[in-house]
Amino acid sequence: MTYAARYPNEVAGVVLLDSSTPYQFDLPGYAGTYKMLQRGYGVAQSVARLGVGLLVPDSVMSSLPAPAGAQVATFATSPRGLRNVRDELSELPAAFDQAKALHTLGGKPLAVVTATGSVRDTAGWGAAQNRLAALSSNGSHRIVDATHAGLLNDEHAAGASVSAITAVVAAVRTQTPVK
Image (cartoon, rainbow, N blue to C red; front, side, top):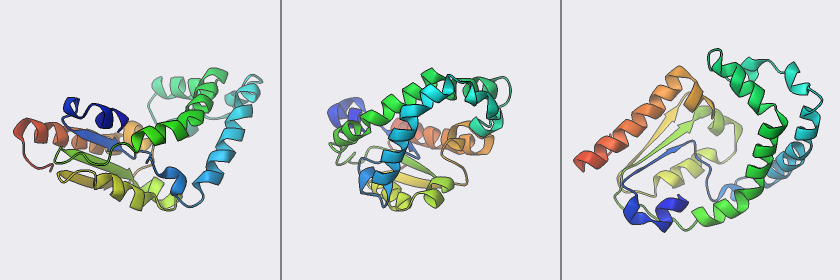
């Protein structure tokens, strides 16, 4: 969204997969959740050095098949992986402020794909995703029975993500509405 706001002539279309929203801190309870995540990830990398990640089954971290699932789990529970998440979290307020510069995509193709798990788990998520979909007059909003991560690593949900990407590319190429 930040790139689209800064370089609108370089963006032909956009796909948002259960995307964060620049107004995420306005969602009910998110500010408290954010503070909890900051604290948790602040100590998690130290705890990871004790090998606690070895107690977490690979299947909890990823539904990808072996060996990819094990690799994801190993990195996600490593001090480096946890430090990366902590650092990413610390940049959210600035990133959201930058993304707020995007007010419209005009008629550029846009597909917003929303995971049912996120709608269920985060108050206001559905409305926030609808707001993102309203950035374009040529868009679609698809709700997929999946978790947030499942949109990439679950076979069915990843297929819906690929379908959304394909629809936006087709709409750009043919200059037609997103299907």
